[in-house]
Length: 430
Image (tube, rainbow, N blue to C red; front, top):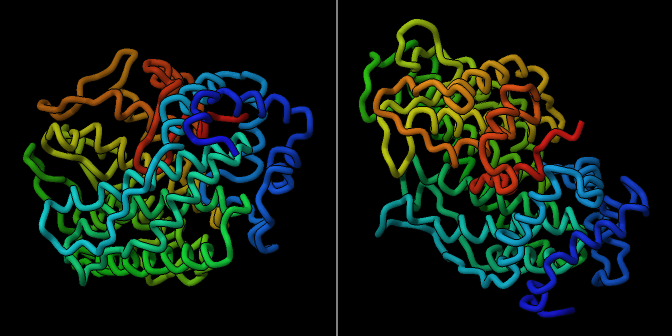
């Protein structure tokens, strides 16, 4: 196998490989079979692993369709793929994992506590996506190396380690990305039985930590109350308290991470808690409903509700502002519907009208003919927000959302926390 550095000098080989594979078939040659039967593949894993079908975000049929479009040099996939390999996945082939053993118990600002987790999990996810869409085993090997060392050396942080509302949600980003990466690479043949067991154990411990944070949130005393804040532009959030808890970003991020982790460990109880449990106020459909149909006049006009729960009242450069936070939350709700669909509880069709209302509302604040944010002090970060519209466009299509997406460099659209190269993975295939 060539060195990782030499691989970077031949980064276009993955696209050439796709072109040569395209004639083989569509689903059969582009799905797991093309990878697991490769002559260059390592020794076969167990039968269960060797036949694993990705299910968190990208499924086999979607992977096959994207591969076909890249091989045919169709846009926007072709240009986005080249940008992704050059700027995101390719450089990560040289990455040395930087494990934070954990757990975090204080000593620095909590928003800085999980930066190593974020960095390595995103790298593993990007490498796994590159592998899934090219069949190039070197990407799988690099993703495997990151995942395995974290599974053996890291300890997730529980509320008992550090009791903060941020403890769960800040780790949820990394947990989701690691589970997404493993989902795409576990049938590569690289994971030994001992490594697969270590990953399952790590994901199980992560599930316990995040489940504790979610259950604490689900017990919030605001649930079941009609309490609301009076409206004003201040350094805070505005909505009905119950909307903030059930439909807020913390709840949806935790739901997403729990579903991704549990789907890899066979933890049906946790999947049922997120998707089906009558007693869970944070259940996925309830979270999406509160996020996209809140009891909320947070658009600042005091007239009709804004179809989005998470409205920041004050712009803060380090965290974004009103419109930024709305696109952040809408992205989570739309992704939660997609992951739920893939795991057997369809939500996208049910919430399509609410998804439509939300992204159509948010499109007002972006070119062409963009309106000013309802917050008079807001500064909209277009570079951060535009990639998020790809999720809405995947579901809805339409000229207005397409115009928003065309207003920026869509070849390089990238969503760092959960999904990575959204133009490649979420541009509509129909």
